[in-house]
Structures are given as C-alpha cells and as structure tokens.
Amino acid sequence: MAQAVETYEGWYAFHDFRSIDWNQWRSLSAGEREEAVRELNEILKQYESVEENKQGSFALFAISGSKADLLFVHFRPTLEELTDVKNQFNKTRFAGVTTTPYSYISIVELGAYTIPPHVDPETDPSVQRRLKPMMPKSGYVCFYPMNKKRDGEDNWYMLSMEDRREMMKSHGMIGRSYAGKVRQIITGSVGLDDWEWGVTLFGEDPLQFKKLVYEMRFDEASARFGEFGPFYVGNYLTQEDLNALLLEGLNG
Image (cartoon, rainbow, N blue to C red; front, top):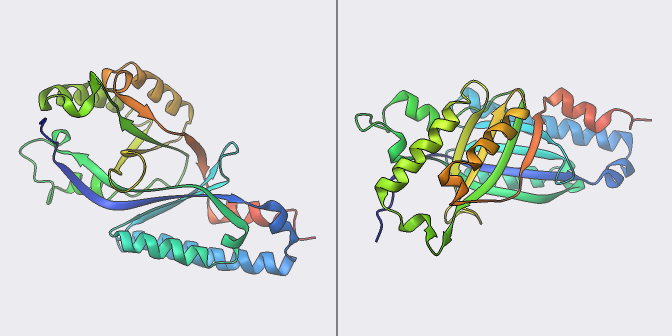
C-alpha cells in the first residue's frame, strides 16, 4: 500500500452559496425588507466579530453568473460552530427568500511535504497563520472543488510518496509564482463533502485566476491526475454594498 501523506488541519470551512428569490423579496413591504436587512446586518456583525477574537474569519461575496447570487464564507474552530452559523442564518427573514444552490464543508489543510522538516506546525507562527487564515476584505474570490484521479494507471493514491512529493513541489512552484497576485487557501474535504479538496482563491484581479488555473493545467499533477468541479467567481461585498443591492430601487 502506498504511504498516506500526513496532514495538518486548522479551521473548518463552510462555503454557503445563496440565490435570492427576487420576486419573493419584492413582494415584501418596504418595512418588511428594511427589517430583514437590519436583522441581516446584525448577523453579519456577529460573523465579523469572530476575527477580533482570533476565533475564525468571515467574508461575503457577490457571485457572478447565474449559479448563485451570494457567497458567505465562514472559517471556525469546530464543525459545531459552522452548524450553528447555518442554523442561525436560516432563521432570519432574509434566508426565507433565498435558496441554497450549493454549499461546501471542509477544513483548512496543509500536507506535511509542504512544511520544512525542522518546523513544528503546532507552534510555528507562519504555519499557524496558514492553518487559521484571515480572509481578505477586498477584491475577488474563486472557489472550486477537486479530486485526484483514481483511474487505472492514473491513480494518484497508488503513486509512491516520492513521486507525489515531486509532483506537488512542481505544482507548488507555479502557485508561488503568483505570490502577490493570487492567495490560495486549500481545504480538505475527504469524508466531509463530495469532493476531496476545496480551493479558494483571492486576488485583486480576477484575470489572474484564469492565468493561474490555466498554467497549472500543464503541470502533471493537474494534467494527469486533476478532476475539477464547478467554478464560482465573484467580488467582495461590504455591508453597505449588500444594503444597496437589497434596498436600492425597491423602497417605493
């Protein structure tokens, strides 16, 4: 049996995609919409407050295209906290006019071969920042799930540790060449969701997502072994942006 890679885990992640039923939202009175937005803003302030106590991170995005309208991304120390977040949101008036076209549960993950052998992941500040990341509060996001192929000779899990390490080293070099342009957070989801990993990219220029993903297609780890799910892309939303989206032009 091929040797399994040791992994280090940090915060749990919940990608909560929402589509708004605009007909239902418009059918509410102006007062009902304003009350729903007030309640929503209070919930968002609670989500944002976890960063002050270093107990998680939160960011909200407007999704482009027709797959969803909004993306709420939560990082928390425990799975129970993410369940509480979901249930708390679902009890709001605003949640009642949304549907969930997609969601994803995973946990921030680092493979042992991405950490120098002399570094203690449990105490090293740089590793801990990667395991418990704070999300950017500007720019754009791209999320997609992925697997490593298990198909005949192209079975990632039957390769030796040395072969996998070398391929991931090459893969990682491409990612590092985009430092300052794209920030990447990898979350593991084996046993937690339908795919094996979730990839969340952040950047100030969405064109860099295309360039990075395209370049990685030519790397053997992706070209031979990568299987990719749906891609979601969008831009960061402040509370003011969200309020304008939900109220402007509807309070007549």
